[in-house]
Image (cartoon, rainbow, N blue to C red; front, side):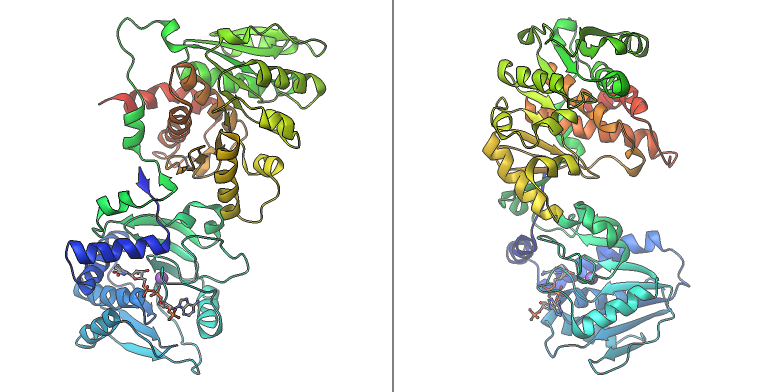
Length: 502
Ligand SMILES: NC(=O)C1=CN([C@@H]2O[C@H](COP(=O)(O)OP(=O)(O)OC[C@H]3O[C@@H](n4cnc5c(N)ncnc54)[C@H](OP(=O)(O)O)[C@@H]3O)[C@@H](O)[C@H]2O)[C@@H](O)CC1
Ligand SMILES: [K+]
């Protein structure tokens, strides 16, 4: 796991590395700038590009000055530097790098508050105005400069953080930040890069290693963690010889109505592909033919709207309820039945969540360690309206612990909130997976992992990662625009095989 740090913790990690490696802060700045430049030259190999480096007078600006010098040394000769001298203060490392730069043949101008904004003819703008030191929304000259640069629609590459963008805490929707095509960020992703609001400012980001002390970073108490490939390798176990269908558990998926059988088919099929020993789907009679022809491996319990089916709940190792279930009285009665009579963690998705919304009594009765898998709207229906994703994180943190459940909030970087107060960001998946039915597949995968004896936390982390990674393997090599949920389900066994190879 990679702990994700707040701006304050990043400063602590910088200071710790400087004191204990030891390395001088100006040399750490040089190392960070070199890491930026190595990535930059690979992405922008054309040395005839004209480049303007915009620098503030803090350490982010110091990086910008070092980057300009290093790029010049890499034979990028059509480079110029513009320093926004909007305050009399500058950092010592900025001053050192200004002296180093002045010894070179690089055109440099200083912008003062009263000056009109500069003409800009460069192809690429490097943004080193402000970084993680941002402590108030942009206004005055910085705001005017950022608005001006945004209006030019140039290719912007930000150093560490786009100017004006908060790395953690609420992203002000009205606030201005410099929109960047690429952010080359130091050491690790910043928390807000992983929240949807960043989409308006950051097209893509890349973290480059600058050698901050990783042991110290791991020792910092951060509720925010990034799940990596190696973590899932550590969770998923290969199947052993002499295992049989009983080894991998019997799961029950309660889903579908006549018109929404697709959700039941996708979730139960994904459960089969993700390795449950046996899968039974509880569906209406109208869906039986579809179920039998779509996925022969799934058994059925037929239900009608007038009486509760005899489910024999205790014989199932894992139960999921909700995909396409509807929100009628019969669905509510079923949900009440499984919540009150099943003694193990449940997986609840889609209409199961819509039924829970506003039903505080039922929410409070959820079996301990149950897993709910809302998307943003379902989350808000359950826990109230939120105006930002940062707020949602705080609610998730609070509710997961209060209700003793796992909350899997689906998004580009799906977040799993735990009763212990951790928030895990998933690192797989891609935009081609934004298709209806993808969540039903995730429900099936998580349920299958529970049935196989993985703990609820393992089932959430591995299920979410596996699902996203299967989608990546399908979409990324050919840059596909769309992958279908059924394809993702069918891909899961191959992805799982890779993640269980030691
Ligand atoms: N530390 C290290 O070892 C390493 C750090 N590195 C680099 O340092 C960067 C962080 O540098 P930094 O802390 O100097 O802050 P930076 O972002 O340059 O801002 C400068 C000053 O601007 C001010 N300010 C804030 N908000 C403002 C606003 N809205 N409008 C106007 N002014 C505003 C505020 O000063 P204040 O106004 O509070 O006096 C702030 O201090 C980091 O992103 C990375 O690039 C790397 O080299 C690796 C090693
Ligand atoms: K910046």
